Length: 426
Image 1 (cartoon, one colour):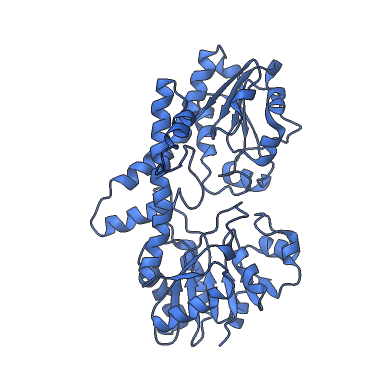
Image 2: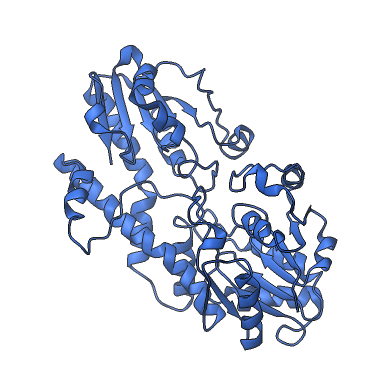
């Protein structure tokens, strides 16, 4: 039986999923953000994950009306799963989505979660909500599956359809259906996990592994900075060994690497085990914004700049290059630390939503044309536009063409550093 798809949550993950399925049949795309629905109906994606041309000739209903979900029988939940101020899992968005779809569930429907959760959450936390709202019994009247999202915002090479999809189901029959549904759009194929819990665990492990490796690079960067050794030079030399892992230092934000490890820690502590490596890596990575800010202050002082009179230009505010995504950006840690020391800051990011920045962080943004001359530039997020403009543009932003440039990710070519500029990078 051909399944009719609904996608709940039309953000960075859900929209590409909905678009892919809509190329084969009608899809119900649901989101509670009415502004988002209006934009999508006009063929505009503010996340830039889907190009305007891709909206054409699709059989898709973008709606904020949950009653429309009754038209579907295969529901994919792709809502954010952040952490709270204490770094504890915040399952409220996924529980609200479960409540919404639960009210619309019918006999033989299947609900598949793509949102990142800790192992066991789908069956232990989400299913009871579905049952309560639908008055149906999971495993008898309807079923559930889990297929972790692997969307990498801004990545036009590794997209939804050409990444191997991990799928799982409550039972063999559900697994078979879930696999067939995803196989219809995933060209890279699917991997059948033996259980929902295994699929959930695989997702958090993928990003926790990266978090730990980046934390090691960041710790090396701190050590080598004290030695006055360039970390990139060290890693370039080490990378000549065939089995060296090519990770690099950086500030780790976003909705995956900077969040998912906390979900695994939470579940581990529930089971009576206090993990050691995972929290240590999180501590190192969460502290890198402050470390960068401290080095900025030291460099300013060492080079004779008076802090109250200093203007620092921050280029980039999103959590990574070439995306407008502000979720869990760690650039704000640099800004907050510098502001504690009364540094004058101006921020420019051509991609992020100005209204969203003001609502979330209460800070104004500068346009490219309104940037005043400064004594220090922080290339916090190497958007392609910044890299294309290059050293000449950066030098023009500095007072008298001289000052300090902080290249966090080490993108700018060192051999082209203009005279009068002091370059520092992780």
